[in-house]
Length: 222
Image (cartoon, rainbow, N blue to C red; front, side, top):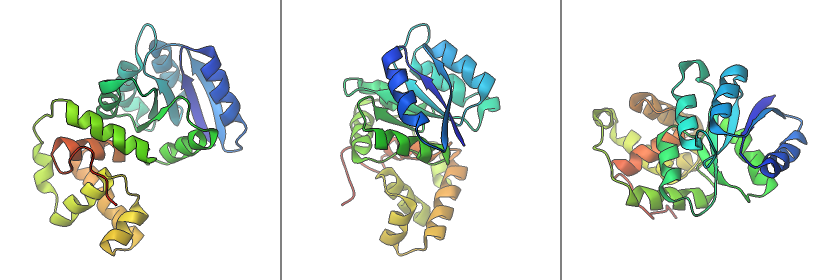
């Protein structure tokens, strides 16, 4: 059973998401929070699998709440999906750098919401649909990039190739097909990349790839 926490200051949004998720046999909404501080407190209390986190909330915004959750060693298994709208410029990129596993626009279709929760709960990052790649590319092109860390030097040529495809939003199966590998081998490469980079999940691999200039903003693999 996937245990979800809903954090949004709008009652209507929380009620709508709860209604959608509660209809699924494998998802349980264990709590709601009306602000970021409450979201962090409930996450520490209940340790849900997934937190759906609005960015703009009173007392503590979703960006800082996300940072507190993902840096808390007691919450290592908790994943955060940021809820946003298209007018939230650099906040989305900042959330991914802070450790969020992906993001959704608030008017997403119910099926996409359910899919997102399941994807993130099993430890993957919400890199698809393609709108996610476009937004990450846009923000990565506008923010100041930090210098790449020495961890990148530890990657093999093949691992750097795989990392570029991860940054383009390809799944393990798609990477395997592109590089003529078995899906298990592709998965192993991705796992090794994450270990070497100290990345929490694929979303952070994407961010690091853009920051290192391994993929240019707006580039999409055909």
